[in-house]
Image 1: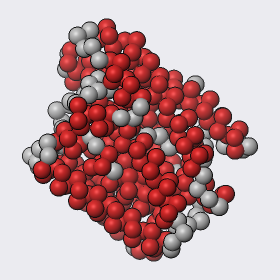
Image 2: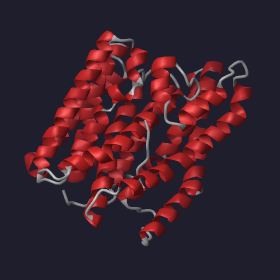
Image 3: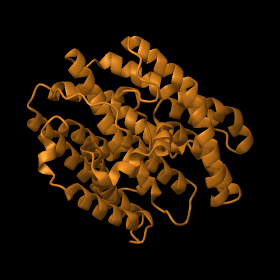
Length: 359
């Protein structure tokens, strides 16, 4: 597994689509009942990008440097999160004066424990969206060691093991959704890491001659067919409701996202619009947009309805994420560039400089 992949603009465009779906859903827009499936787009993307970061590093140094990976993840993810928590603790007591557990909720979010806290104790309330950050953080903690164990084996063997893990993780979620409450299943790492695994599978697939398996038009037809089904799910035209969407809507979203990633990596024409500059810029802001939008949307959603929630939440998210990206996160990018003794070209940082957590 030695292929080294650089920055791919279309993946940022896909992240912009994902965060838009999530934000519209969190505003409770009536035309997008299951837009929260955008989180599953993020999971597949994160699994792909994180695995490529680890493999890129291994291609350069000959080993997976877990310590450096952890330091870079911490520096990439926590400064914007701590900014959110700082602002939240300043404003939340005035926005929600009857709620007495803002400090506890911020602690759960800051410690990346929101996933199981929500599944077991139904908190944090106004920082509920941080559950997906916790899911990804647990994956980051475990996956480098799994990859170290797998890496000495043949790539095809690794792909087989990863495919088996994905299938088992999916079956586990489907079973849990059928036997447990929606809240107990939706937020947990053990029921939601399948998308991360599928993304990791696609990342390792880059190290074999994968393009020969996809004749011209196959990816386009597969993606367009999947997107049509996905639109039905997103609009809830199926009438499925929460549990079947969690069981099968997630599977559809994960598979379609994986197909789109393959199409982007293959340079298919039908996904070139994902590289449109304004879209990729919002993709670079997507982590911050995901962080900052939810409390604002929740406040206005309860106060005046979904339109104000979407407008004010989106404006706040874009402004705060841009502020974070061009100040705190820019400092982190410069710090990482110095550690590597190379400065990435302005506006086109390397892949390892560009992963954001979300969902």
